[in-house]
Image 1 (cartoon, rainbow, N blue to C red):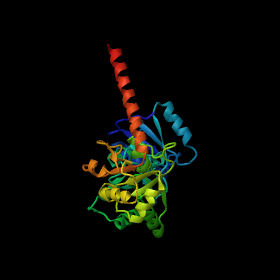
Image 2: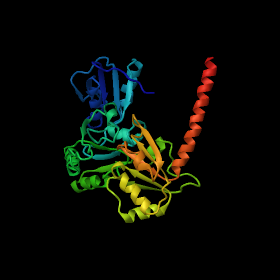
Image 3: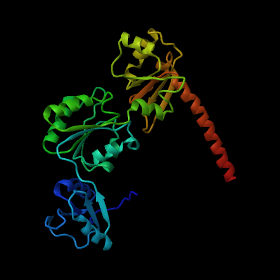
Image 4: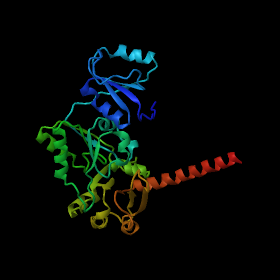
Length: 344
């Protein structure tokens, strides 16, 4: 059960050692609560007078024995008790894959890392709009846009390392997965070089999830048993076009609108048939999601108005999606008809 309670001006007692409770204290203060502290079960560690009857007791699991008796007395007295996780070790970096841009596809580990963060460096492809509801950390936009890099990659790495060296828990929130065209390897290397503990929380890659949002499976029995993921930031070479055209299966191109013309022409020169189905899925899982379907020979014209962020899908699996879409639309029509008959 998840409840939303207005804590503005409410007295909240946070129990637990200073190290373990520091994140919980910040979360409750950010929610507007008047926070008091009890650091030991014996009551010897507290900041200022304790409230006679707090609105809520936030019990941080710090591993110390002896809290059970106090918390049981609170429950008997009718004071709500909220179980809170202990803060992680201070001064580390977590690279978090934010998925395709919706909080619904954040992993449990991603949510936990955000909750434990002191500062979050995020980019525009991550689900940054919902961050205030997921963390009380400082939020820093370091997103790079085409032709506009307010913070360089080396600058981002320096910000992460310096924040961690001062004892802050750092989350680098990236779209998709940190290790799929996300420069996660470079950021891990920068942390390792500086002696900063670092871990990676994998994310749902847009290479699979965005086609799925449009109803396109990247593999399908008797249609495609493999898929290749390609970066669309720079044009491919003739050799790469030849390899892709001869490999078969499904080709998925991330952020490929800017190089779509070269890609289509290169695959045609490499022998791929002009009627190969192709889809452009824009803004997957975001408002304004749109899918444009055409053939390799006509996609440049059909997608003239498309913009990044977008995922390109090339292969016969696009036809599978079209067939499924027809069935889905027919089922929806039947549902609407049944609903209208019931109303009548």
